[in-house]
Image 1: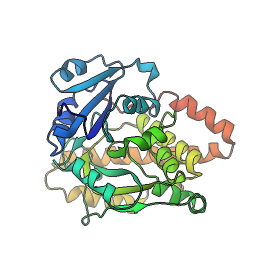
Image 2: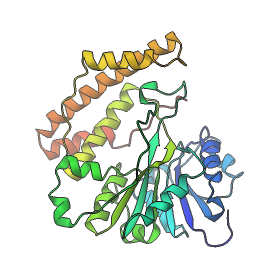
Image 3: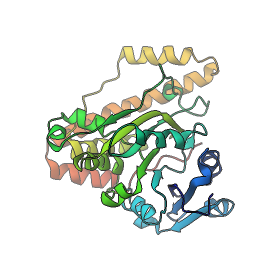
Image 4: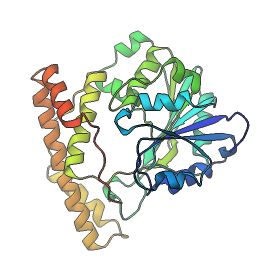
Length: 323
């Protein structure tokens, strides 16, 4: 890490990240631009060996009380303590896919005029302990694209289009620091990145998506987590963009596609294929249920929706600790 003013400040919110810290920070330190970086870790009350592990790395640690964590405001704290021209947002269980992750995002600022930020892509690697239905299977090489809208043009987009162009991702995103100071993240329990993207467009900025700036990221799920996380995603996409999901009902064709996908994975044993088939079928049923429940509550009005969201997700859902 350079002792001079860094070019890039990397902000990582952390809580009980013992399992991931070496992988996450190792990926950061492998970057071609690492000598021009600083790392800021915001720890919200870790009770495992996270803080001990961090002592072995050149990082600035900021400790906060766990009850004060907020997806938007905590990241603003990281920005306030940063010194770089650019600020990267990532998370404790994300690992850079290659040594050019930062460079690929940095290159995106030259793609168009008035670029405020560049977003990469998170993917699931082909590891046997991760859901093979989510393994990354690119069809071709992705191309970086720039988006900008006048206030009128953005207002004329459909809810689905708004959600699409604001599909921002703080698992892998680089910002101009002055843009984050001008447009800080909002106080929110979820989807601070999507809301920020909307605010950036409305303030005249251009955003770039570069699918080649990849990190590996995965959450093992159980039905309770899937239900709560899906509900809060649907809630915020509706609140931010007016987007409503389509009714989902997994049928024979979906099941057939899953079976074919799993059977074609030679690295999996037959027992593993059965395990992941059951896993996906269970989660798909939960996904269908939460969408149906959400749409019913929307019909009851915003007050009922807010109340149900607070009941389910007042404390943001946390993925189960299975590795």
